[in-house]
Length: 102
Image 1 (spheres, one colour):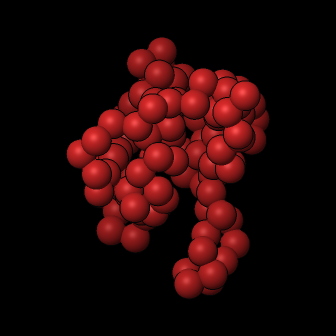
Image 2 (image 1 turned 90 degrees about the vertical axis):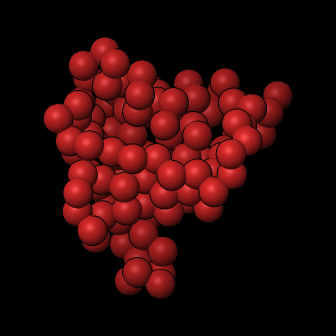
């Protein structure tokens, strides 16, 4: 499992698989390289009370990406395109399930 840690806040971290985190990182880094802030939303696990959470992502707010594995993941182009497209909407980047490879 990987973790995205938001700013220096102790209580804002998002746990997901390393594969999901690799795809989210790719989209986040590309958006921030272009100077495009956006929101990122995810479903909270029932163990945390359920519901949904969102954060504002911009180059002024530090993020860390922590992977359990040191091995890089093969990227799913279709999923990257879907995630990047969602990041450019008013709703922002939403963590979705990976589509099957064609």
